[in-house]
Length: 155
Picture (cartoon, helix red, strand yellow):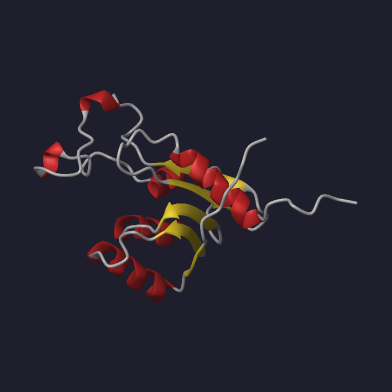
């Protein structure tokens, strides 16, 4: 008889997103994502970090202070990195992301043809950029759904 305690596709792909987030060097927020086609094949993975050719020791990681002295103008978000790292056309794909996307990433996801966003956390639900994200996603007809916390153990 086959094993019955295996993880679901959702748990698997969100697990890949969470594992990808562990590559982020951001001390405050680690976000990862995994893009999957309709055949359950991974076609893109990303995490938040500075552009790849730049030494990340030369840029700030602060969250507060003058804008140019914070991480915000320099970090590429996980969703953008996953799109840029993708190996196939993203039309009709699903993205698994550990944090609900901001409005800038949402515009990229819409333009890429993503059909569904599965996310875990929504810490910034009431921030203007996330409110804008929800409006854009609704207007574009993109499905969103939240997964609850998952626990994946490596044996």
